[in-house]
Length: 159
Image (cartoon, rainbow, N blue to C red; front, side, top):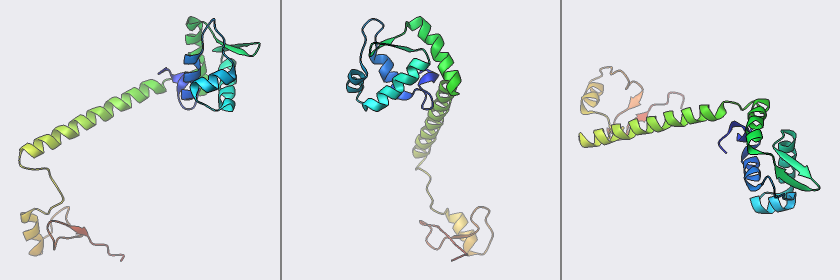
């Protein structure tokens, strides 16, 4: 159910759950689907109507049936294209991959810093503190009050 047709702006998770609960040969009513999926009956009826419009579900005498799976995949593509969500899943996977890689890099840097003698913090280095006390300009520390080197505070001129 990781298809683009089940993106938030298309059929969503509710549509995916409804399709997972349906069968090609055994029909289910909207009330049965609502109870089985745990959604409000009105929500299920709306989703069923949208799924029927996209040709993924067929309604006969109050029971809903799943369309053949081979046909459904082509129709899923069309539904995603009409909803404007075609390609969103691949973009989401790429973004998540980049986030995982960034997190791995961050944890590796933290581990390396800890092995070198500690994790960097906001404490003012002694060399910077001495230079500031002597009135020298230190790039990056302009506008900071470093009277307590363990807790530098930004000087707010507006206050």
